[in-house]
Length: 147
Image (cartoon, rainbow, N blue to C red; front, top):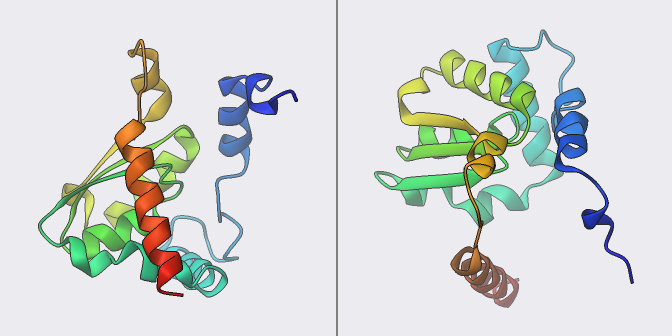
């Protein structure tokens, strides 16, 4: 069986997300306004109510968080609102621009560092997320036990 991920170049993935940042259409208000970001957040967590329970934003006060695939920063902002210091990474520069604007709108720019994944990956010879994957597996198993 052929793996489609081996066929799609990373530049195509980046182009896709630059053209349609995740959740960008969750509001019809002016993109970049506080109202826009508030409406995006409300819609996202209405559609995906499991995220706040899973992320436990309030639990991470005073901790350092790495969010990979931050998109336009909805979860990023909630970690920072609750006192976490966040490093947020995404492949889409358009998404990162909106996430950075969002951080400024909420006065949280000093709590969040944004990075383009493509720039980071281009500097690496190997990305080895073994512990990350094990941690995710354990978290999902614990979540499923509590359902």
